[in-house]
Length: 151
Image 1 (cartoon, rainbow, N blue to C red):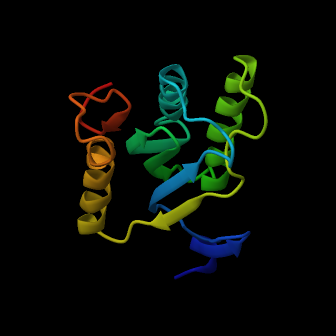
Image 2: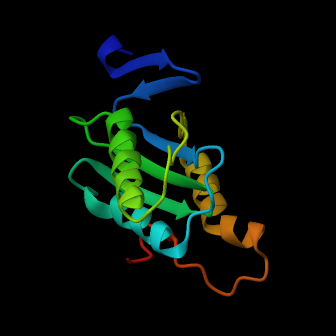
């Protein structure tokens, strides 16, 4: 594989980049932060969709009370780490304007290259089921989405 199509780097966690890949990404609230309230979950969902199809292809997501999972494919002229920085920075600033204090998100995030269709299906199902796994009594959960579900 040509070097320009694949590279890796490490912060606290290793990050692998592959041109054209789909990624399963997870990030969490910073230690000591209270759970996301409904309005904040909605703001995260809105931020995820904002540059969909322009900077990335959004495939699925779930915004939980203390973390976010996303399946996303970066467009060739945009880096995944820049997309994540944009989502986290935009939402953190919005939350601060509404009174949330301190670092909102953990600095680091977990990402994984989705290797095949079976893994894609598994990650999508995991996200779609995540709220009911945590809260079995739920009847509906508006902060979960997958391509084909509408908005």
